[in-house]
Amino acid sequence: MINDDATRVVIDKLGDQPGETLTPERVEAIQTAMHENLGRFINNTSYFVLGSYGEEERLRLETVRDQLASDAAALNSDDGVDAFLMDDILDLSEFFTSKFKLLVSYADRIVGVYEHSQGGHAWEAGYIDQSTYRDRTRAFYRTYETEEEQYAAYDGMFAHYLLSMGRVDRVYTWTTPEELRDCVADAYAPD
Image 1 (cartoon, rainbow, N blue to C red):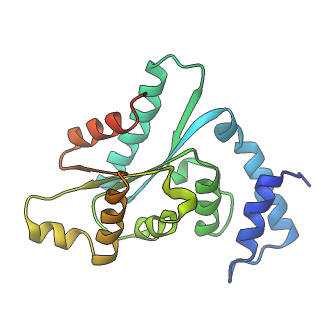
Image 2 (cartoon, rainbow, N blue to C red):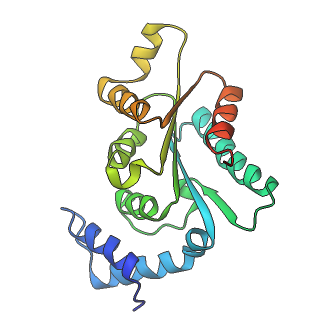
């Protein structure tokens, strides 16, 4: 079995989760899959792009992913960049939540692109709203023309998450795909 202390710590936390007890065979399979994919985390600056996988929303997630990779390449930096969506990575576990927890544990940057609070990405936002992940996270959320549309898009819990991210200067708002691209470029522009 591969022995990697960082991976072992994450796997131990996953195995302690109710309903996610991991057999020795499953632990070995996760470790092997992580080591096959670790280069994207070790040799690169990694951007994990989160949000809704609805048809229209996914197009914007893919655009952000591609923009982050191409902007970094344009800087001609010696550091590699790997921007990815959750399903771009090899399936590491039959539990989506375990896979998500592993990926956020390794990602250098966590990029939330939000247009509403309906779907699994709302759970993901709640999970990354921990001090361990907060410094690596930026939230880009869509604003709507009317207060009624805004209220319908984001439930109270998710709206509060966005407000709290704003209080620590980790939130950006956008209304059009062009504004989203500009916000992402500004947020991750080199110092």
